[in-house]
Image (cartoon, rainbow, N blue to C red; front, side, top):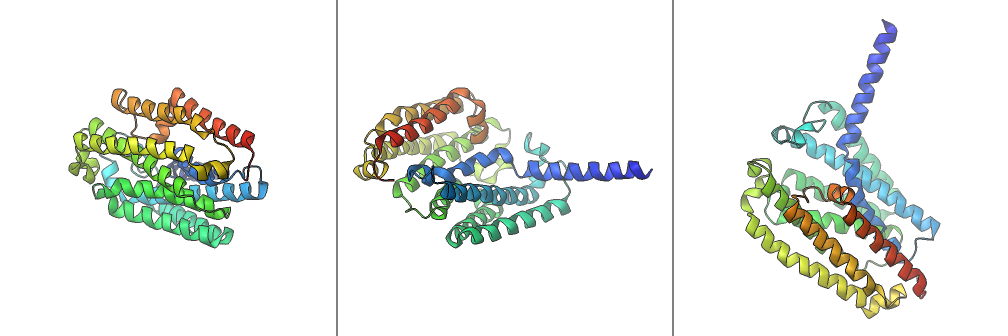
Length: 308
């Protein structure tokens, strides 16, 4: 009887821990790789102390974003139960109780912020701003048309800025511009897929009642060329040429073109884009394109020499 009770206790704890981990959305942590952008484009990837700081920043963003996801699921539990996919989430399905979920969120939030300020005060401030912005988004701004996608884009910018601050390199306006435009593109495609694929989509997300497919497509048509032009101008900028030590970054433009066109194809022809992370991880051509782009950037900067 005692052994059986002990097994039940451990099984319950393991189930709770699994529910917490799933609620933290580990697959979404790929978004936090934006933290490494400054490290790469500052040509500091071989500097182990700085790479370690960037890795620590990545980990803290994962903990902080995990806590925000848990809080969001607690707040949206009733609505998620009406969603065909979100109903399976641990909190919505009641596989994870409210008390352990709240406890985990508080612990993760406290730990990540304390460690963030200890790592680098300015980075801690950015991490705090990221958490605050996402909490306001969860409780209010995700229901406000246009502002909702702009907040999502701002989250990516804060990741990029945090990655620059933690290794003490100047924050590039090019990095900010390209990050916010690309993240707006992804966020708008996500809204389009939600509106196109869900029955009673406006019940699941209030802001969708103010969107239409035509309106979203018009915004995508604005953001897409803006993203491409921004990256092309970045790749041929004399400032970037001097900083990166190569005048051949324009050779990466075809990868960016193909990546955006492939994503649009998946959104319009395959019903993808609802989860940018899942789309990237499950579409081999898109994943290969991103990998080849990153490899080409690193090779060009390595061969180019010049100031780091």
